[in-house]
Image (cartoon, rainbow, N blue to C red; front, side, top):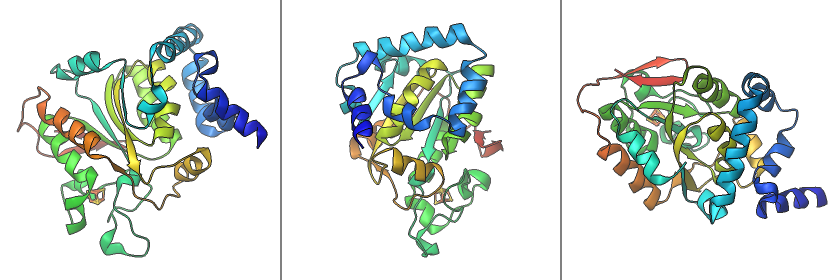
Length: 266
Ligand code: SF4
């Protein structure tokens, strides 16, 4: 317990301009860490050193990061991100946690018909909806993404996020910009990986139902998450505003095509 408190303290004081002490300490010997280490970091040692120093620079120059993890955070900064997604050829990937799906245990009518901890969604898959979908955050955001041609990804585990999103970006530059809805703990944890992969991002934190610490995060990573997450009004307005104002032509897209776990409008 004393060690846990000490590690958390290192994050709080940004020891060595690093704020992933707690997550890194708990992630030692986990599969997702090995995947990232062997597929991304070790094959590119010089890039790893350079990007790690960029991450430390980012932590050093930012003020109030612990507050921003709980609200929203632009990477590398607001104007660069907004300029990037205004470009016609940069269609960001919108990552939505599976915990946003409506879910009440043992009450199918009030729960997502596609199941809980998976990448599936009836609407994204074949355009169908049920009554419960109409109030689902994934449905509302996906409808805007379809108009604008943005890719949608229902996020589950850290291992899948590495396989579906981060490693394809390193190898093929497939996802240079993204808007991710995450718990504050995950925002803090994913930041070095996003910098390493050169992904410009808007990270929006849930303000309800989110995982508070690594123990809860690990349960959710294994698909055990009963609570339904939600954004606060400010973040909700921010994402809808960004999607609606982005300069991509409307009406060109009619449905989503699934490739792996990512849904592409076409
Ligand atoms: S829109 Fe998709 S994720 Fe939301 S409830 Fe319907 S099937 Fe589930």
